[in-house]
Image (cartoon, rainbow, N blue to C red; front, side, top):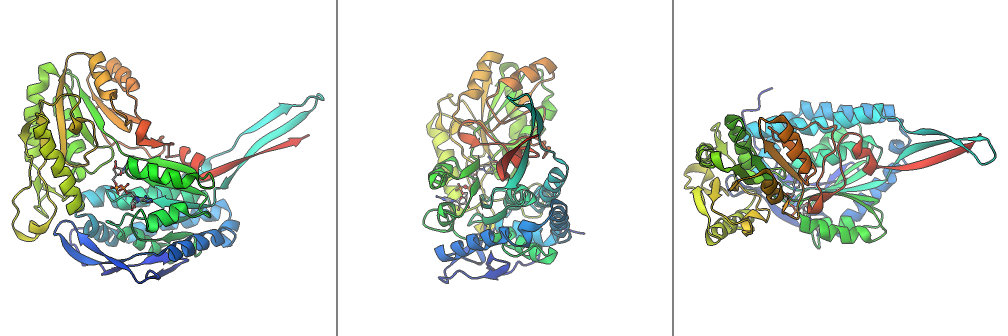
Length: 494
Ligand code: NAD
């Protein structure tokens, strides 16, 4: 299959409720913009409060229909069929994702779309193989009891998603939720609604019972996001997005004491020791700063470099930054746009603030001049700063753009303290050829994931999530079962 040729995507993006595509009950729409051109490519039909209630009702009803009665083996077959159908329609998913995000096709075809399928396949495997616990318990009368646990689905799960890896991050939650027998109502980001809608077609094609997978479009407060998370028949809420949004959703989750799983923002640090393999460190860190135009929750926005190699590292990273070509669609060095004009304004605000805070702008710092179709796109220059104090806001707040501050350090203790001096705790990376130091410093990082001599090397079976303000809970492999199932302990006196 070739992924090289973009094809036009359909104009209208519809809600998917109870197995059918439909407009919003109040006939409201909002524009769907291609961030690589700034042009409108279609409209999204916004779900009303009544539509969201219909979606939740459809999801609830499906729990007591054929889906609720299905054996794990049959459910696994259906979920594996979803993975296969995503792969069969990979070109459609790719077109939809690229139209919504403007990201390079090679990024979406290597990361976003294959992971969309893998997320279903992996969790189908997990639920096929996982076993429960059994204890032989002595009883006070000298007898015995058999204690074991059974896992049941939580029920209706609300899945609220961001725009940076729309299909990947949505299926990371829908995959395990369905594998565990739940039903879902998805609220994709208003910026990137297309792949969630397309997944509705996949569900119908494989014969997924109606109501198991539902999609409602809209915004956060006063719209589909809030209607969904506040709905009393939602049993659990899984959310990926900004920490502030997580706080708002947490308040809604308190109604009825619903369970939450949160993957939130970060201000991730990288530590480069003088003994690091500099070629590998620069290659890895230039990906971690600039991939997806810096719109990666795991991306690096602070790099601490041991003083003897500081100047060389900065020079090499600057060269790497300059090798990206914002706006050059189709060029292998193409750097995609930021997701929206609003997000570009936010990132540019930080670019200005860095200068006010005393940064030396090593490279970038502004908006590139672009001719041709990308002229109206929301492009921005990859940017590096040095000379910032640790207290500078650009070194403390999540920017979510292709930029980072590079800071020198002199000792291991100093750099551990600097890296951990943040309310966030999503991930970090450590670059050193000293094995003991790699283990030691990685273990000292207050984060959910720490890479040594690599970045974004993911094994979907591992625990994924953030500490501090970067999240609540861990998903991945068997860890996802903790959130997507409820355990019942059965004690049988023998
Ligand atoms: P966002 O929080 O603005 O929006 C995420 C989703 O929440 C959207 O669907 C939005 O419509 C919805 N929403 C907004 N307000 C809401 C409310 N009050 N109630 C219910 N829903 C609401 O995040 P974003 O800008 O789409 O994504 C970028 C953020 O996501 C960054 O902070 C990034 O770090 C984070 N992120 C984290 C991870 C992770 O795994 N930790 C992964 C990707 C992105």
